[in-house]
Length: 196
Image (tube, rainbow, N blue to C red; front, side):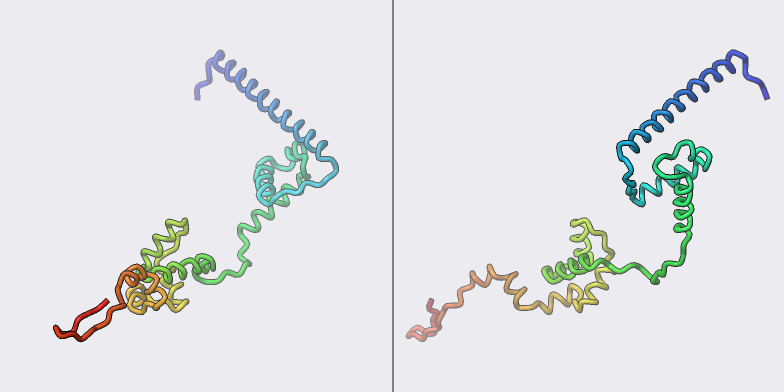
């Protein structure tokens, strides 16, 4: 292995010292900022979220106990390391009972599927799925099929043949109103004539 030329070694040593001073200055500033924030907060205990605890635990574990003792100000190093141990234990915890199969569909999504099927009797599973995607919900065709089956709703071709009167009238109201139902057949000398 070749040694570096003395000038290059000197410049590398000089540069690494400068980087080290910059890092020490940043760490010193952050330590002082933590002290100021603690003084401003007073004796009140901080309420940290689970996400904040997780982030502190991961960063604290990387530092180790000795460096944490010099740096940590919000909580003790033991607390941070305990959070890390708990985080690792939860990751590999298999004690929570899990049901087999896929999770159930949310009730509001199922209600939306049923509503779409009832309002649009000609829509099949794929069309309902497209309508849900348009609203921002990703639901599989088979899930839609299972939801409709659970609610006793027939697939689209059968739904179309078993259309309730209310839906039929709502869909065809313009044509019904345009039809002339008020005619009378009158017998005249010229034969049977329709009179209005």
